[in-house]
Amino acid sequence: MSPADSSRPIDLENFLDNRKVGRFHALLLALTGSVMFLDGLDTQAISFIAPVAAREWGLPLSALGPMFSSSILGLMIGYLLLSPLATRIGPRSLVLLSTTLFGLFTVISAFAVDEVQLVLLRLVTGIGLGGAIPSAVALAGEFAPRRRRSTFVMGIYCCYAFGFVVASLVSGPIIDGIGWHGMFVLCGSLPLVLVAVLAVLLPDSPRWLLREEETAVRGRQVLRRLAPDTDVSRIAVRTSTDVPDPQRPWSVLLDPIRHGWLSRTLLLWLAFMINLGVFYAAQSWLPTIARQAGATAGTAATATALMMVGGILAAGLIGPAMDRRGPFAVLAIVYLVSAVLLIGMGLSFSGPPVALLAAAFLAGTCVVGGQMSVIALATVLYPTTIRSTGVGWALGIGRIGGILAPLMVGWALGGGSPALAVFATMGSAMLLAGVAVLLLARSHRRVESDDSFRAGDPTREIGSAEAA
Image (cartoon, rainbow, N blue to C red; front, side, top):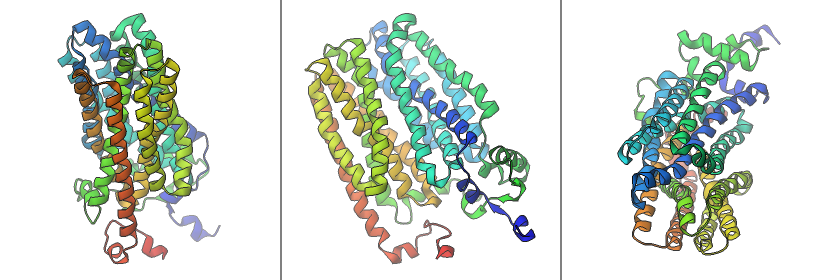
């Protein structure tokens, strides 16, 4: 290496992209995956806690809707309002803060004495959950080499789904053994223990640390952990693309609906809202509907877990198919198939237990697998300059569906609607999501083929001119 080469700055983005996956990455995935796992565990546990608490308080079936939806509303608030704090305090600090918040308020929820208290406490818990998820995923994605980035992010979300599976399997025995209060204490204590581990081992974003001289020393310490054989003092950040403009910290939130992105963003939001709405409605109400149909507690819990297992397994097939065949077409097919499978699930409640279990697994492949895949679609849709904002807003806006759908199912069931009608309606909604994805594909192809538009699009990839 020449003296000139040895003194030349190393671009941080290229440096991270060219690292081999090793023990540092494995530890990072284990830590961020643990945050996601406990997030999923807490989110799903309320599906089993709420019916027991409602019976204890003598509440009607419709009262479960606000209990299910309050934490989802908190998630949306966390996504939209708390996650931007990462640009001010760093993603690591936000993960620690948010994990502490949702752990603490989950423990406090054990002492709720009525529906109103529980709904308010679950709202604050959801804000913590919503603040932790984007920063945990962002950290995993930042350190991931570009060739493995989708695998890393999908792995993180599989940990989240696995938390749903575990909650479905253990909630019944734990609630029967120590009560719903004890389940809250357990679900809240685990994140508080994890925070102590994260405080010691979780690295912060080098991209965030290197932007200021007073934090650059810590940034180089992180990079030294990743690459002890590299002169990390030479590593620099591309300020124009990697660091938010301090002069416009909030205006960047509008980028996904400006410069010709409005129609595509609205279609993406529609797909997110429908998919998340069906996902949360099915996961929240499946245990209760199954029990009302005569299934045992064990069968209801297993069916709920199998939905998540189906999604986890399907994600390993849908993701590569999206890479090979195109993300829009594959996801549209997934949504169209899910419509049929959801109707089949509605029919399964009147059949033997094995039919319910099989239907739940198959519906999960498309509903849960589709939810993981639409996040991947969002990362493909948006260019680097607005990707983080676009994906974050899609996740946040999508929670509107997650809030409304469980409430609507509660109203429908409380009004006497049969399970088949409820799941047929979910299937019809997924058909609409499939149509939205097809329209999104058409709009995206039209814009991408319009050279005059692209030349004037300020959100196009920075650096493409240099590469040309």
